[in-house]
Length: 156
Image (cartoon, rainbow, N blue to C red; front, side, top):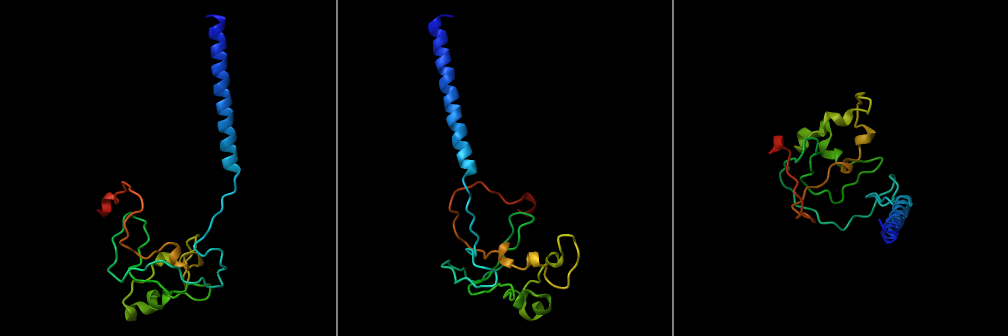
């Protein structure tokens, strides 16, 4: 191996090391940058109401099929104007167990009456009280990006 070859190898190794160093600095800067999370309530406290959103609501229709086993059911009707606050939950006007015969709505699942520790409660568990954390109105909107998602085989 000649001195020129050694110099070339040393320069190449040096350039690669500098590139890796720059990459590591960029990764460190990205990791340390604060992430700003924004909830659907936009920072509005739970005891205050948000103004209605500008989203389009679908007309009422039959319940949609689920795409995976633990998927929360989609809401088959409009929820425009529904209030869910610390003191009032509009969904329970129809879905509370004592009101489903009259309303014809689906009863709230028994799983919504259990604490994390499995204790049965007389009323909806606070962790399951805000329905729209998991349940969303169904829509026939086209996907924003292409994907290859397929329903669970047992649900096809």
